[in-house]
Amino acid sequence: MKIYHLSAECYPVAKVGGLGDVVGALPKYQNLAGLQAAVVLPFYDRKFTQENEFETVFAAATLLGNKRYFFEILKEKTDKLGFELYLVKIPGLLDRENIYSYPDEREQFIAYQLAFLDWISYSQQTPGLIHCHDHHTGLVPFLLYHSKLYTRLANVPTVFTIHNGQYHGAFGWDKLSLLPEIDLTKTGLLDWAGGINPLAAAVKCSWKYTTVSPSYLEELTYNSNGLEYLFYTERLKGTGIMNGIDTEVWNPQTDAMIAAKFTARTLAKGKRANKEVLCSRFELNPEKPLFTFIGRLVVEKGADLLARAIERSLLENEGEINFLVLGTGDKETEQDLLKLKNKYPEHCAVFIGYDEALAHQIYAGADFLLMPSRVEPCGLNQLYALRYGTMPVVRATGGLRDSVIDFGDEGGYGIRFIQDNVQDICHSVFRAKQLYKDTAKLQQLRKQMMTLDFSWARSTQQYIDLYKSLNPII
Ligand SMILES: Nc1ncnc2c1ncn2[C@@H]1O[C@H](COP(=O)(O)OP(=O)(O)O[C@H]2O[C@H](CO)[C@@H](O)[C@H](O)[C@H]2O)[C@@H](O)[C@H]1O
Image (cartoon, rainbow, N blue to C red):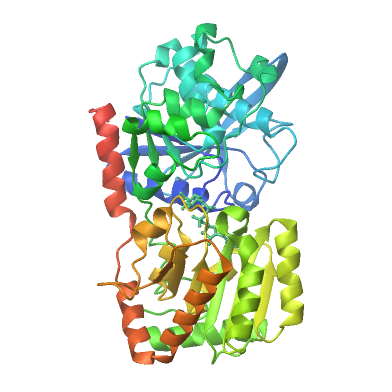
């Protein structure tokens, strides 16, 4: 029976962050394990959609408030991603380039969810399960069970995965008219703090919800941007399943995006060659330990601490270390980092923007990857870093706590710190610099990191077990 994954992102079609990585990989590994998983995304006018062939498998019109929208469901013809990929195209609403941040984003995501439900309903399909990811898809469980339009589908199980509990996609009750006819005695299921809250609605209405690491399940009960009480009361419905990584995309032995391919056996030579290419591009001295940060420059990731932590570390270590930052996000943080780059050009390089190939080259060429996250539901960067023999230096929170053991502890291979402050980051940078001097020890730890298994195999089975507990004939 078919399982539909609904998400705003899916690599390589459309990715802004880790959500895209997960939805681009999990269905592929589920299919290898014998399921029939497909992905349904909004249509974006991007490289992947321009360069690949699609066929229209369904077309109809849907109502959004009092506006009628024509929509099409397009299917990628070859299934080359390892799963069936469907795109919801709505001229004038879902036919643009960017994934987020349009002023009518609410309308876009509501229309996407309604078009999906209309398609499934009118084409008389009965999926084995619908798996929704993050708030952009959070109204589906409510609509499935409490709108008269979809009563035929009311027994289809839904699973909702929270990749980021800080964003809820909430909007005012004045937009209720955008939804189709619903059971008005059930509006409390949509409500949180006086508004329509898709994340809260999904937690309440889905049959099960999951978080992307076990620690994050617990953390949501005391840090979820206002939904703490909800997560506390619904906690028995939740399961924490650690993300995996797509070892076909993230493999230093075959990665076409890095300058020199390598394995755990050829690690020293490979890392050196990649570091030289990286340092030469950013005019940094490859003899010095290279610390990097890759990610969205937002408070959640501790990016606002970076500029101060880098400057203080440079001063404390008298220029014995180098930093390279790749990211985009809060404008003030971007400016602070660019100022730093101008002040310390020999020790600090900053690339503001999104560059997938550069990210791969950094994982391959850097010595240490900094993740001072305040909130980290799972974190994929540290898992990629480990696979490329780059030591993660992380704040022990969420998935970082579940995946990185400090090298000072038994079996450890990374660096952990507790507080989200400049002092703790600097102390960890100092520990890393000291470790860098012990070449033999670092080499041994790097080999250990590269042999760790964070592939999807284990997590895929946990999802399958969860699905089967809801629908045994999947
Ligand atoms: N400027 C840039 N250029 C190139 N590549 C860039 C980039 N900025 C980020 N990336 C890439 O985007 C991905 C980021 O993934 P994360 O899991 O760390 O974060 P994100 O917060 O987006 O995801 C949320 O969902 C995921 C998936 O569940 C959780 O792991 C995570 O904790 C949660 O916050 C990585 O592949 C990284 O290399």
